[in-house]
Amino acid sequence: MIRDKNRHVLREVYSPGEIDARVRQMAAEINARYQGEEVYVVCVLKGAFMLFSDLLKYLEVPVKIDFVRLASYGMSTESSRVINLTKDVEYDPAGRNVLIVEDIVDTGHSMRFLMREFRRREVKSLALAALLDKPERREIEISMDFVGFSGAEGFLVGYGLDYAELYRNLPAIYALSFLEE
Image (cartoon, rainbow, N blue to C red; front, side, top):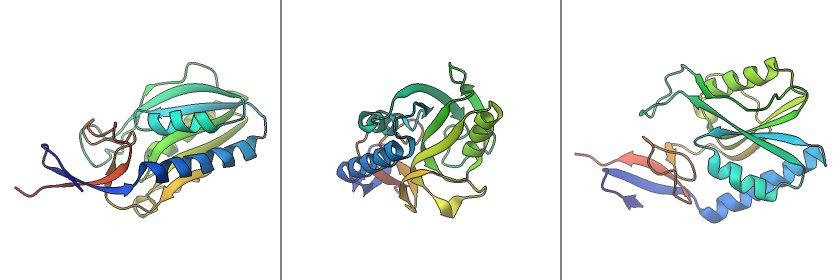
């Protein structure tokens, strides 16, 4: 357990070793699905950048990469449910196998928005890889193809996930809580 100067308590949920092992398994599943076909792998910034980087190291299929950025949380622990695409892909995804890489899927609003955007662009196939699935918070049904971990409770930070832009750099995933005044 970590107590920091920001009056936060961090309790480790997934260690760096557990994360690496699961990312390798996810990559093996992706390699098996696409078996040599080219995949347009799209990272959802900022949270998925560590997963994206590590996942790419283990992919054996031909890949092209790109990035999108959505905004829905701001400086809060709760989604505003208003999704904005603040950075779009640079290349046309039409006719491509698109794999979206996301850090966490909880309510489902952001991924529904992004998946609709890609379907509208007439992609060949569309899949979603997420490091964390929080089905207990789901408000909208979202189908995920590749999931790292499911069901961890609490507000999670580390390995790309943040609270008010803090903790993205941590190599493990932690549940964040606040120290009492």
